[in-house]
Image (cartoon, rainbow, N blue to C red):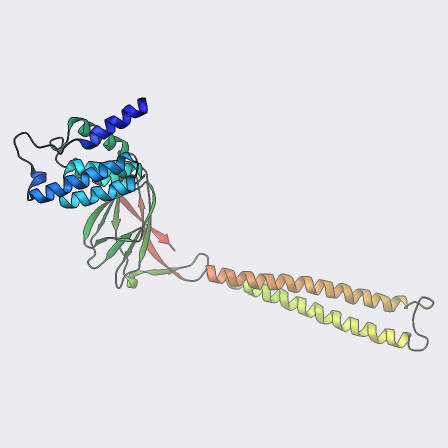
Length: 320
């Protein structure tokens, strides 16, 4: 029974006629014809029916068509109701601002109270990014969407979390700024691009360090090559000695390989194993130096902007 009562109350709230101001001063109705008002009422009724069926997306479409005919705050507030049900807080906050543009006058008392309650609810679910720039010709995007052309300022309502600003201009270094903002906050971002001619080239480490690693790897690889050459020479000497020693009667269980000749084979194999290990180490060092050289490549060092919640921007340098 309680659920039924709630839905009856909601149906009555949705069905409330569009309120007229007591002294007939209705700035929200300026320039709206009787035909447009009639069309808006019909679309509003259709949206209300869909809303009560919990078809919020369908109701939203009907309400959007209705405000296209007559942007009445009460219709606009029904859009807010749908957007909240669809978890689209940023759009809901934007539409709620429009719904409350004329205060309580165009809304029933209960609807106005509900709108104020939603205003408090949404306050912590959205945030504002206030972007300013002064360099002519620059353009700024927010999360891949055009934001403003410079010089100018733009306030954009966003969901809490991480957002990305990208500013670009001919003859300047393109700049990407990450903005992390909490619900209910306003982040002020001053965008300033650095001319290509003013950019400096920086490295992660001193330029000689990766080359030292590369040189060391080559040296170790060379040592491994020398040890491998010696191992091959010793193995060749073993083969010659073995051929001479076993040329007449052969070597086998009854006539084992002489100890001094067997020692040459053991030494050659040990040297070969050492050579393989040393050359592997040298190759690893050379490969590592290639990675270090790439990581240490020259990159432009440009100023970046650090932000404080609700505060101004602070310029620092050293961004790669």
